[in-house]
Length: 70
Image (cartoon, rainbow, N blue to C red; front, side):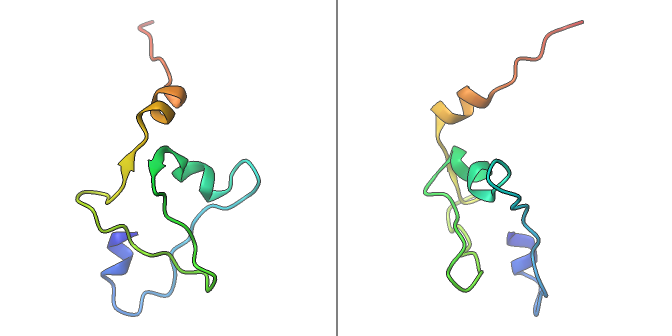
Protein backbone atom coordinates (compact mmCIF):
# COMPACT_ATOMS: atom_id res chain seq x y z
CA UNK A 1 0.00 0.00 0.00
CA UNK A 2 2.78 2.42 0.91
CA UNK A 3 4.76 1.47 -2.19
CA UNK A 4 1.82 2.08 -4.51
CA UNK A 5 1.17 5.41 -2.76
CA UNK A 6 4.64 6.60 -3.82
CA UNK A 7 3.83 6.01 -7.48
CA UNK A 8 2.48 9.21 -9.08
CA UNK A 9 -0.87 8.55 -10.75
CA UNK A 10 -1.01 4.93 -9.56
CA UNK A 11 -4.10 3.51 -11.24
CA UNK A 12 -5.21 1.20 -8.41
CA UNK A 13 -4.30 -1.11 -5.56
CA UNK A 14 -6.05 -4.46 -5.64
CA UNK A 15 -7.28 -5.72 -2.28
CA UNK A 16 -8.91 -9.11 -1.83
CA UNK A 17 -12.47 -8.61 -0.72
CA UNK A 18 -14.38 -11.83 -1.32
CA UNK A 19 -16.82 -11.81 1.52
CA UNK A 20 -17.78 -12.53 4.02
CA UNK A 21 -14.86 -14.69 5.19
CA UNK A 22 -12.34 -13.24 2.74
CA UNK A 23 -13.31 -9.61 3.24
CA UNK A 24 -10.30 -7.37 3.76
CA UNK A 25 -11.64 -6.35 7.19
CA UNK A 26 -10.93 -9.88 8.49
CA UNK A 27 -7.31 -9.77 7.36
CA UNK A 28 -6.71 -6.42 9.04
CA UNK A 29 -8.58 -7.32 12.25
CA UNK A 30 -5.25 -8.32 13.82
CA UNK A 31 -4.33 -4.62 13.98
CA UNK A 32 -5.39 -1.88 16.36
CA UNK A 33 -7.26 0.79 14.42
CA UNK A 34 -7.23 -1.24 11.16
CA UNK A 35 -7.34 0.40 7.77
CA UNK A 36 -10.74 0.87 6.20
CA UNK A 37 -12.05 1.94 2.84
CA UNK A 38 -13.47 5.44 2.66
CA UNK A 39 -16.90 5.92 1.13
CA UNK A 40 -15.12 6.86 -2.12
CA UNK A 41 -13.23 3.55 -2.22
CA UNK A 42 -9.88 4.87 -1.00
CA UNK A 43 -7.64 3.85 1.89
CA UNK A 44 -6.03 6.33 4.25
CA UNK A 45 -2.43 5.22 4.66
CA UNK A 46 -1.35 4.30 8.18
CA UNK A 47 1.11 6.90 9.46
CA UNK A 48 2.99 4.96 12.16
CA UNK A 49 6.49 3.50 11.82
CA UNK A 50 7.05 0.35 9.75
CA UNK A 51 3.76 -0.84 8.30
CA UNK A 52 2.07 1.85 10.33
CA UNK A 53 -0.15 -0.57 12.21
CA UNK A 54 0.02 -1.94 15.76
CA UNK A 55 -0.85 -5.63 16.14
CA UNK A 56 -3.47 -6.91 18.58
CA UNK A 57 -1.45 -9.56 20.39
CA UNK A 58 -4.49 -11.64 21.38
CA UNK A 59 -5.65 -11.84 17.77
CA UNK A 60 -2.17 -12.80 16.56
CA UNK A 61 -1.94 -15.53 19.21
CA UNK A 62 -5.39 -16.84 18.28
CA UNK A 63 -4.40 -17.09 14.62
CA UNK A 64 -0.90 -18.46 15.20
CA UNK A 65 -0.23 -21.77 13.54
CA UNK A 66 2.00 -24.19 15.38
CA UNK A 67 4.81 -25.46 13.18
CA UNK A 68 6.24 -28.77 14.31
CA UNK A 69 9.30 -30.68 13.25
CA UNK A 70 8.69 -33.71 11.09
